[in-house]
Length: 532
Image (cartoon, rainbow, N blue to C red; front, top):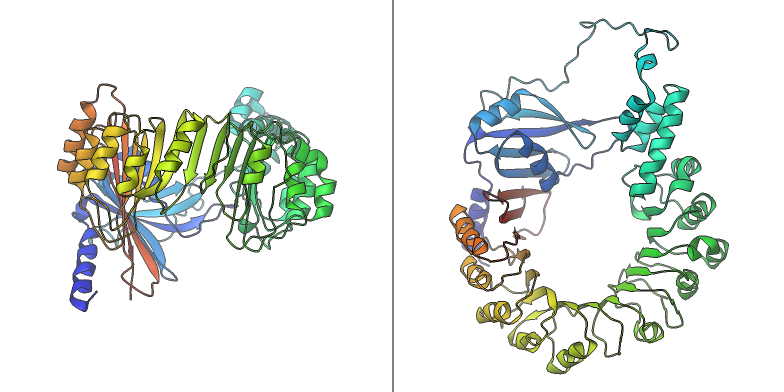
């Protein structure tokens, strides 16, 4: 790419991030987190959009991040009155973090103080003694207190409020135990990052935990996974679903937690780089009651084998890694009904009902297509190349989901033929492997025939911008409304650029089109590297 072309691209991307009307735009800036909460400095476009949508219709959200210089987001409403009213509120709390909000108009930016409003002693408060009849706590019955605790999702908030009195502590534990049993526990969401915090929580609520998720990556000081597994074994006697990301499990630990593993009916496990298992097959084989097993690992994970493992109750198996051989395992477990694997296999799986194959940048051959038809699976999902070999899947009428990798041999007729010949296709994800890009006219032609499609995702090639506007939305909306089944369609477009070798931050933009959200919702994402 020569300098002139690069500069033109930069200017085009800068125009994408221009604000159309400052009168309709507000700016939010992170100020601080509530006690016990953390903010990682990144705005999630969908979260910001969903929060501010309650105040009025939004045209777009913009997110700016510069390491060491602070982050902020811009929300452009379609109505300037809504923007002005929202800015007047000055402060918001989103997901446990405080944000300052102000109008983007230059004349307004000096009005709002950076500091939180300090009420001082303007409202005199004289709390009554805890045992006084005038104390408000004495007026709350148990049902009121239960409603209070039903609104609490953060475990640290629970511990703070439960200290108010014995009645709060008793009812709080009752309500929180029920929520934990119903919803499960994600140690990351609960902000439990140290062994001490985790053990205290498990002492109080471990018997109610049936589903548990944790990852070493998000924990302070990287607590030892063997120690944590032993804590789960000690306190979580009713645990049946475990989702873990670990770097290894020792043989001695596997032996000590046998009763925990043998009680599981669902295991999701991700093994990070340089994972070290004393005996991986013993770890998996100990989970003898498993009905669902999902595994993934880094490319550098080693010493992982399941060749001799037989799980007689296993129904669903998901392995998105080439580091673990599966042929011998599948041969020993022919009862599997739902299978997701990376690569292809030629084994006979008589019970298979749903099959997902990730073949990435490769094509499906006619021989492979014949084998897939012989399996009689009711649903097939494929990750393959979009080239002239696409005709080999046309006889697979049970395909429901496709991830298509577009390369230089792409022809726009492939998409039309695909929609015509695979009539019950529900989800399509298109990724570009070359500079060739699919345009919106091709998408519209395909949608004329994709009568059962509910989800479409397209990642454009790097540095390529496809402009989507209300006219495009209206064109696609007409096609969706003409479908006899009235199925709603969700579309997501993503444009990115890597023009620069070195970056110190990001710009992100989300534009949402949902004039008639009952039928069609389109999300258009842009991501641009900032260069100073």
